[in-house]
Image (tube, rainbow, N blue to C red; front, side, top):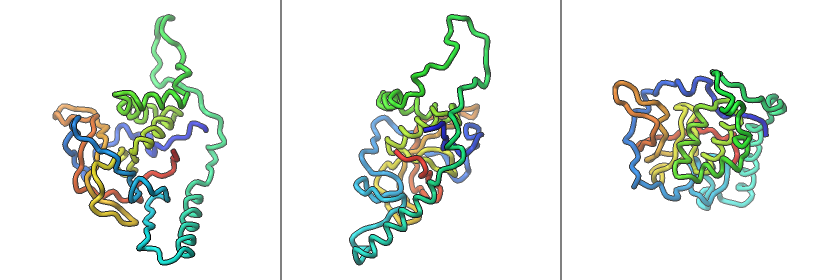
Length: 222
């Protein structure tokens, strides 16, 4: 697995807050999301493609269901056609802002950060999710960003390509169609606190939010 990145913007950390995503209330420590499935699926038990809406009432026969399933799989395969960069050798780490340090200071990046098991352990730590977000936004176009994103998806976070941030269900969607779902979500505000005291770098609650599936990143498999 090369150093493939799902970061769609090289300036993602400097992306301004979209006016359509007004800041929600910070998530409190006693507000739990529970096991609510993954954005894009009806519930956690269904393992179909993103946006899959199969149910007993919507499919009249097994043959039609099989045909629709095959079309879903063909479409998913089309979106996952290997890219030219997938055959490239992983790039070595190059510091963006090198600084002169004493010999006692580590001079090379620790090899453990390229170990997927390390990121799995990070995700289990009390503040592991914050660490994963930090790696995603500040280790762009690296293998570490890819591993951090993979662990975030294991925690049911899903990346919104329009707002360049991660969302997770806070409750079951009030509306769910083939094109979108609507309800209350937790999202990660990656903006850093500034002079107007608009604090960022925290998880927030967003009510009455419509998550359109065409903005859902679904290339990275977990």
